[in-house]
Length: 536
Image 1: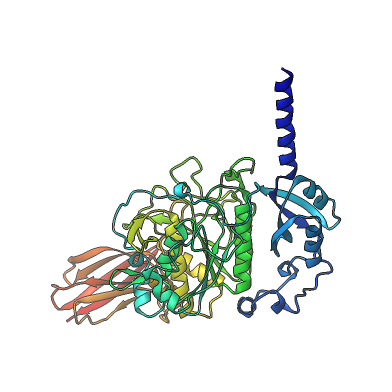
Image 2: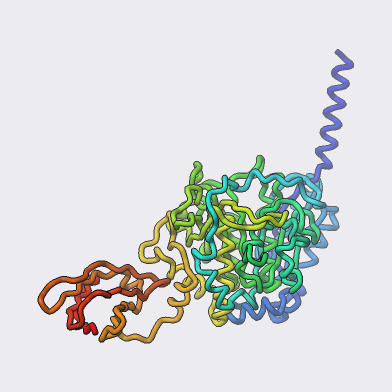
């Protein structure tokens, strides 16, 4: 009995000794930025020229929030013996790895406001073993037509391929991107300008989960005659933020650090196909009541990026068929595009997450094809996969081509044009958001025509048996009913026509009618138009 007690006490001592020296990860938040060597008057000390130029273009001031953490504060934490890693300008915080005794000392520093536990003690060297189970990966459904659905095929053919636009991707790994044939063009033109692995604290990102490879292939891969990415002339920043071996708040902070780095590096667009709701114990999980646009760490990061002129695009989430149902964070962000999923026929995928947000905003914002999306896997094979993770980069690619064509636009103007030109913008809901955008829809929305009339009917006389209807603003006139009557009072044609920004000019084939004079009546809302039409 005595020997068993002694053995038990020995185990307890060993456990307590191990626990006392166990190192977990924490965020340290500081009281202020006083005494910092950085000033808003010398932004090149902490921002790239591209980042400064982007702010200037969007009319965004550089403020104290943009200033880095005071280096002296970091030194004081480091002097205690804690390992110091990434700092957040926007949250005035520092990620550390420390044991309990060191944390107590850090909390006692007068410069420290608070310390938050964010993850268990895993050394920031090399990350974890990949686990693909957390990503939506349904059975293949159909051949993808994703580029046709949103008009990026036409955009690409017109020569708008994202040149001059920098896209940052936050994901779980990009294996094969540095060797695959499909990315040869991207590598040859030095299209990847920066990489960083926030899980492993190293530059290498061509490891771990293939999810990021999928996303990048949709944007930038090319195989002649087989596969075509959307934004092949954009520049890319690749950041590995997701530790697929576990789920803790540290990954949200990795997301924040990467977002800030993308901002300082001059990114124009950030696309992130990551979503957060539940975490491994003891990290606290979210509830749907937290979807208020200002609670989740990743949501805050997206909002801050948007405030600095970055177009933030994120997947809406694949929770539409489970108990959560709603968008996942950061999909509840305020001035960003949360992208849901539709099939090739434009019908909502059953897994696509729903809205509204807790504060009543419509989500998702827009939709793109997420069922049966064509992409490249890490073996350079063209395969089809499913999920809103794959619809989001399509919208980012569409935005890159539009920004190349209209570089004068601010991110807010581009975001609104994509939203308001989508095919359900007339009656948005929390299943489809504002609908499916289309390249020509956005172009038409931006290039409002010079016609004075609400609806133009031409030509008159009709020489080639085709009568055109063109509305000035399909948001105001999205449908009409028409009736064509001959001079004997007989109705020879009637019907309805629907308009959208993608197609605000429709043609009526009147072939087979005898030459002569006809009366055309057009009804929309309370308005009744009557026109004399000559067919010859």
